Every structure is written in structure tokens, then in C-alpha cells.
Length: 314
Ligand code: TXA
Ligand code: MG
Image 1 (cartoon, helix red, strand yellow):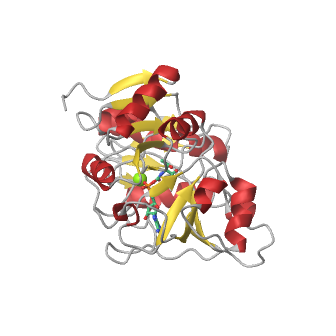
Image 2: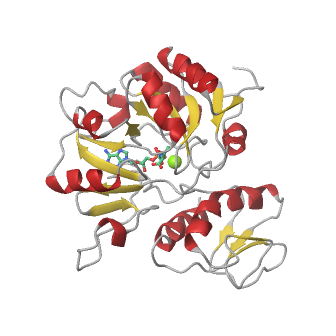
């Protein structure tokens, strides 16, 4: 694949047709979802799924999320408990991934589940991913469209930079609205915090929903659990009230910084801007990045989760 790849095509019929053609041939293409840009391939073909792992340089023990058009399609792949069906009915399409027992007749590549007896499934809301699922006519495995270990892409340019020369096509439909990867849930447990908060998902729960501790490679329950997983190139310092030395300061609310996640202290806006701000901080050439304190409530829990990973030792 040449260094001028990927091509970036604006969302539309031509882009979706081209993407579906590449997927039918066993290739992978980058496509926006409401969370982050994903790198999609046919989830039923091991050769196609291997192409995702190869393009990302991803360790093969980390399983992928399978995207489908609707609940009926999800029920052909996995067994739903009452709790999981209730969540699916309430939040699909949307930024929710459910971890479910995989059906014996699902027909998924074993590479998608990385040998687990469960599968992570999501019905996305974004028009581009929905159109691609319909055009491709099959479940699509899609991790975030970035090189393994680096920050997830919220813009087509982030994808083109991170996967330059490694994929043929990015469908560009502007910045992704939520800006953080989907919330991953297994029954009552949140395995990865995300745009849908614990309070929204489980309003009747009287105790905090259990979040398993981050695991080391080899003992992964779910993804996103590698400690250093969303890391920019430069070191990151958290809960900073001002920049030290040559640091680039990412602000929030009262703390202005070189760039701010939200001048008004709006956590939803901050989530949508987080990865773009980290990409810009990296591009600034500053030797290190400092980030203002972000309240640990609501979607601030997911923001702090990603920041903690960005700041953890590599
Ligand atoms: O918003 C998102 O979820 C994006 C968009 C593209 O849909 N996708 C995404 O995928 O973030 P990825 O591959 O970067 O993260 C998938 C996560 C990983 O942390 C993986 O460990 C977890 O899902 N996962 C996948 N299958 C699992 C399973 N069977 N059990 C537990 N965790 C699983
Ligand atoms: Mg990822």
C-alpha cells in the first residue's frame, strides 16, 4: 500500500459504495461512529479480521467489537439475558457495547473474540457506520482506527496520520459527536466507562456499579484494560493548576491553558474535545502535557479513565 494512502472521501453514496466494495474483498476501511472513528472489516472472515490487527499493530489477545444494524442482527450472534436485552432496547442504537455469550452458530471469525466464549456487540447510531453496515450486509468488526496504543481518532485527519500507508480509505463525516469510546457493559458491570454513565444505564442501582481493576495483558476480561492504552507520544501530568517549565497545558473551566476542553466547564463538551486536544498537544512539540483537574462525576468518570491511561507509565 502506498504512502499516499489512505484516501479520504467525504460521507455520501460514492464513499459508502467504495467502502462496501473494499470490505467485500476482505479489506478494512475507516468509518466514523458517534464515539470515535472505527476500522471496519468483515467479522465473519478471519483473513479480513487479521487485516485489522495487522493495520493497527494490535496484540492478538485483545478482542474486537462487532457492529450490527439492529437488535435482531445482534440476537443472531449472541445470547441475551433479561438485563442485557433491557439495556439494548433502551440504548441501541447508541454508544453502548454489550459483552454477551457468543452463539455457537454465530459464524464469527475466532479472531474477533480472541478465543473467548463471549462477544462484544454494538449497534451504532452514526449515519456513516449504519449506511456501511447496510451496504456491507454483514457484521463488521471495528476497533478504534488508530495504531495500537495511541489515542483514538475523533477526526478523519487523526486516522490518516496514525494509519498512514496502512489502510486504503477513510470516510470523512467530520468530528465524532461523543468523542470517547463506547461504554462496555457485561450484565451489571461497566467494564469500560464511556459516554453512557452508570447513573444513566442503571438508575435504580443503589450501590456503585462494579468496575474491575485494570488488568495486565494475558488476564484481560475486557478491552480497554491495558493500563497504557490511550497514550499520546509525550508524557502527561494530571490535575495541573498551571503549566510548569515548557509544558503544554490543557485547561478546563477556570483554568484556561494553551487549549481548553471546555471554557464553561461542560463535561459533555470536554469529552467530545478530549482526544483532539491530546492530538493537538502532541503536535505542539511541547516536551510534556499537563491537564487541568476534571470533575469525577457523570461522563467525567470516563474522561478521567482515559486521562489516567494517557498518564500511566509506558
Ligand atoms: O466506541 C467504540 O467502542 C469504538 C467504535 C469504533 O465502535 N470501538 C472500540 O473498539 O473502542 P476497541 O477495539 O478499541 O475496544 C474494544 C474493547 C477492548 O478494550 C476489548 O478488550 C473489549 O472491547 N472487548 C472486546 N471483546 C470483549 C469481550 N468478549 N469481553 C470483554 N471485553 C471485550
Ligand atoms: Mg482503541
